[in-house]
Length: 548
Image (cartoon, rainbow, N blue to C red; front, side, top):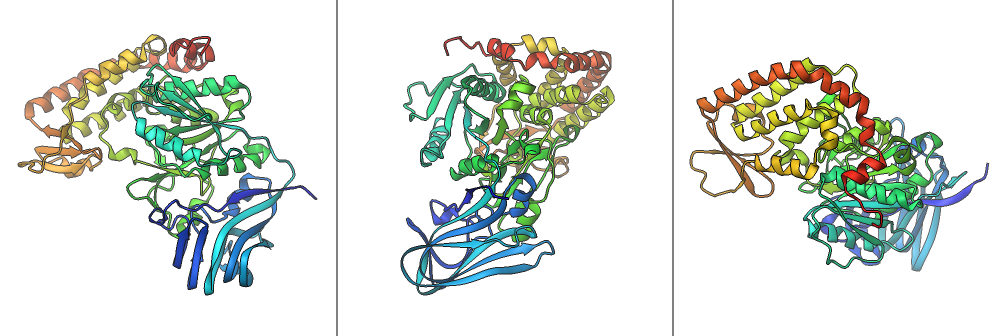
């Protein structure tokens, strides 16, 4: 059986050696140059890494590729080896060749004859006298049908001008045929005077949170009728631009049964660049289970584990690629403002896949002080469950509320409890309230209830200084606690008997209200949620003009 031969993966070099972190290559005796990777005499470099290993097991699972082969562009003196891991974990050298006195770059092609049995392929370069320069390492394969893929990249931003322009600069580095068209949706309306490159379309938008910003980008991309996929990206990620091209290549060879899946990028931690925070996740009724959390992506066995099939329920919108046909079929996101919008949409799509080498760096979300999340997380948890779970009950939600509120009491975060109670009250108003409520004004009311964060002082008196995500058991017995946010700000708390009693009394008053109004609210969300996902609804909600 013959087919078209295309390149499906190309080696990625870090911009600077300090950014390598063994995610691109590992070994000894090498130097990153503008021309490629120079391996010195006696040096040895291997590409069994997150970005440059060829995890053929995943490609076999999700794509229609056949008979892959490696193509290397090398000059100098070296030994080149093509290796793979078999299904029993054994390392096998499939082919070994030597290059001598190659003053000009030479192209070497090596067949991957054992691709059906292999889990991952990679190359090893060992430098001889005067060393060798590895300029490129690409994977090609036969494909019966190459699908047309044209991605629109949507970046939702709000007052993070430096972050969004930095990512645009990264995308600019891609050559024209690799570079997607970018839609910058500006909820803060602070970039109107900025001059963007020609591949960027700037869209000022009503600030209806990430849900509103990403939906506006989806609306505009679908309206163009030329895109096959929409990539949603946070403004504050650190992006390896070649990930965009790898996404396009992967989508172009998908098996038919995965054409309707969303492709979720992994979240790698900015503060620990080799540690994965999430590789897809399950909603689990609100008790989120992240796949691959804490994985050290420098470790080979961990990379193989990360390549196992998990079938997560959703992917976070720090980087997530959604087929336009699915948007047209299943509608737009719910107007949840922030938090859980990506979860609900992933559950609705119903199929999520992840691949090693497609990921971005982002701040680990659980390390931040929750602030507005104390409202949106509780309200939106109930909305997601009401929409998707027939067996979601008042008893289950009350148990969730009690645990959450007691956690804030034990942490001394009394200010957050007002937000928790407001979230309950608003959910119980039902779908019609969510449809009619102005998201901007509501968020303004939520913001007024937030405690004021302070600068962290060197002298903390007798207070206990801890990170924001500290376990409740660590701080439960402490009277004064200072919770430190990664931004450098902090939340000061001081537990008192009176505040604790008032918080508990408020919780006791809230629970009977849940019993009284829960079923009516749940039914309204379950039966009417689709009305909130139409193009007409969102055009009105965002106050989009016809000529925009």
